[in-house]
Image 1 (cartoon, rainbow, N blue to C red):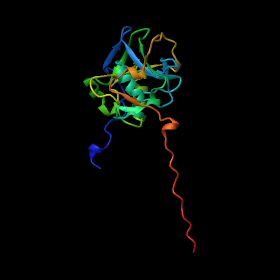
Image 2: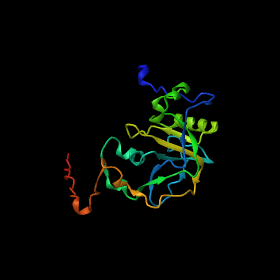
Image 3: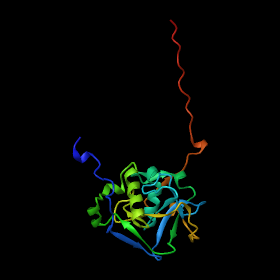
Image 4: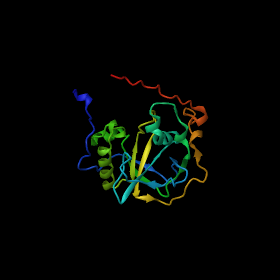
Length: 211
């Protein structure tokens, strides 16, 4: 196997002092795609998120634009397609949020992050063992989260993973979130087939060969 066929991203160094930062102010708009029946301010730690922390802390994922937020939620279903099942958008909304207070997050999109061993793989690699180790190290250094390039959205855009106590934060929410299907003109959902639209074809009979 050639060297370029292997993962280059390594675990964080012993010290992250001086790591580049990005300030999220109380006026910074954050966008989160979520189930309309649940609070957008949820800090999870089940290991299913790239920068998940461990209990009793968690990570709340958002983006700096609405479309990136939606694509990050739909990524495993959407992939590189522009059409997806209508059921994937049911009860999904995008909320515009603001933090109650400013905080500094680690900026892995900064060119200066390379001095600490960061590569673009940190933003897209699977499984998540290495990124989650980075999350724990960044949180231990005092960062309030991490800003990174979203895996499922190309171009100049950013996602953020905010660190905090696990569970719901109870912060102010968007009183008028936008339905997912209204967020991106490039995403199209196909309707779930009705029973009347489905033709059932019986399998051909098999013949019994007698000896």
